[in-house]
Image 1 (cartoon, rainbow, N blue to C red):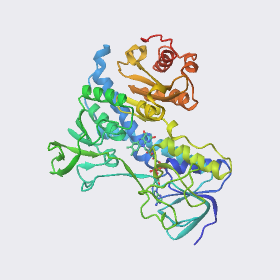
Image 2 (cartoon, rainbow, N blue to C red; image 1 turned 90 degrees about the vertical axis):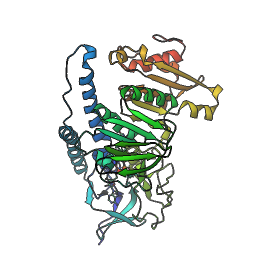
Image 3 (cartoon, protein in one colour; image 1 turned 45 degrees about the horizontal axis):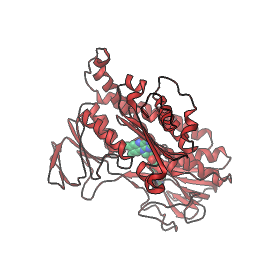
Length: 458
Ligand SMILES: Cc1cc2nc3c(=O)[nH]c(=O)nc-3n(C[C@H](O)[C@H](O)[C@H](O)COP(=O)(O)OP(=O)(O)OC[C@H]3O[C@@H](n4cnc5c(N)ncnc54)[C@H](O)[C@@H]3O)c2cc1C
């Protein structure tokens, strides 16, 4: 059976797929959006939103625990995990309802079911063929494990951890990237003993080395243990606990093991290769128009090599809709995509690291300035340590901003404008930042880089 042909058939209704559907419909295109689960995908149901709700609950717990330091007497009586989960589910539920309403109001044809690409212009669901003048692959990603490490019982990924209805006494977190660090932060705030195991030499290894250093120092102070530069060997689930053996001969026993070793593309068995789409280790390579090697087949989101972030998926989805509508959108600059880890302390960055800038432009061509949050009034009020680091071309634009400290994720908005609009330190130094805000620290950093430091040493 064949349904009528749509301008765009989208396989996968996560961040990338639904953003594409909404923008395409807005532009007057006919859209079929296929998903086998709930619209909103990983980000809304098992990713960004639920984790940030848990992190907010964790921040409230820390505030209650530390309130003595500002003269307010409270006692943290405990964490009611079912109630925390209810709060988290409430947030997700409201957003999900809103998304469903939006999709409906734009007239998108939503098809529930598992789709496979059966030819270059057709996705088939339960025997019904949906033809598209253009097809967008947006099937997202899944939590990876390691060879021989089965996800069951006490060994879980973020999917199971998000519905775990107790605070574990102790946890080993395998992987010190963004997802691992965020869960480590939540569980520590809720009172668990946490140990992170990371094979690379530092936590959050994709970020500027200076950010990792402060993150590690602060985690240590918070009582989050970590072992870096050491590989996982195997894990034994003993029913009442799990023992994690490492290649350095040591082992750690804990109540849970969270496996946070990255996310793989969900592309297997979906007919992509058979339809002629070139694949690279399961990912779908695209050109700067986000088109695959097959004309009329596009790919967006986590299946496209690069940063696996929801806002990248949104931007790519919008891009493809505009491309198909003939608007000739400007290609997405991957380096200009902001990155935030919402653990305590937060790590936020945009543009390239100091090491990458040195490699690309040569050490003599760049300038680096690190503004310590110790000089920032609002950060003192919040009792947070950290810094804002600027990486700039000499007499040229700022090409990287790297921040660490409580709540610095909220500063990424201005930081990404600076980098993406290729502002120079002098340009930003003329902008007046409200006092006392943490945002002001960005202004101060640029004042200093422009040679006129205020609350900072030259
Ligand atoms: C724990 C966690 C925390 C995260 N936190 C953040 C964060 O704070 N900020 C951020 O930017 N990103 C975050 N991410 C990443 C973010 O969730 C992803 O980058 C984003 O969801 C990718 O969007 P996508 O559209 O590519 O895929 P997905 O959101 O995975 O959506 C893919 C959709 O395709 C559907 N699908 C797959 N195969 C088929 C098929 N054959 N037929 C029909 N439907 C199919 C799925 O059901 C799913 O709905 C987080 C991820 C995790 C796991």
